[in-house]
Length: 309
Image 1 (tube, rainbow, N blue to C red):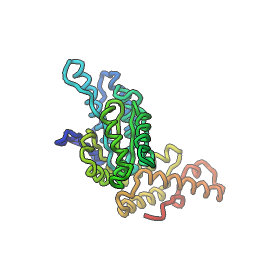
Image 2: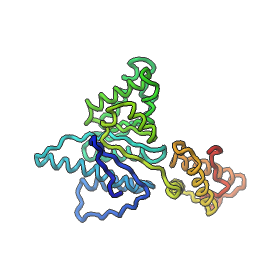
Image 3: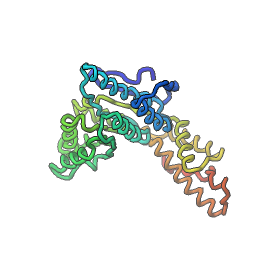
Image 4: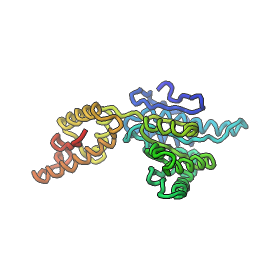
């Protein structure tokens, strides 16, 4: 990714994570500092995730932005506190929540956030049933997120329903606290790319409050295979040659036939693996096959795929 961060006219940072890009290995510096150890710890966790090569580079740039700003402040240069509210765009299962959790951990370690914890919520957690209820529910969640990150999934759902919908009350409350407590917590709105764009169009001025926008593209078939193998390795299972071929062909089919925003990426693969492990257990029990090799091997007949595509 030659230019992972691009400045827009309104001062926003627009980031696109291109998982197909080749990232050169990082050369370890000879001298290590406490700051760099913090980044290295986060990188190790990111490197364990499939298909997020460019996320590492993006987080390094945000990290550098924070550290250099502190150095400027030490030298008496202008260095106002950064506003780090973010927007994550992409389909489900593309790593958004995982990245948000790692960013919270990083921000806590470099002193941007006092706790670095992640509070996950959706529309039902914010929107109440009567006037005033929504504002209180939203304030309560913001209070829980103080010192950490408030992560709102499917955030575009707050913009549905028109002027009389209580979702607007939640948005207004969030905007107020984003301004009043902008350095006390980080707000991350997440959701499908198209729906998030429409949501922002309905709320003029909201987009400018998010200085960092990250787009998460779908995983490739090979990356989905790697995710599946990693999940199985953690559980001490392996795919037989025929099962691996069958799974790869199925993933190729669903990626080409699913409506784009219905495909859940990593979650889809996880569901297949979990169902297949249960199917394998039933097969082994019926056939009384309990040797080590059979206990570890998922065969093609064990793979369970959703009936509807």
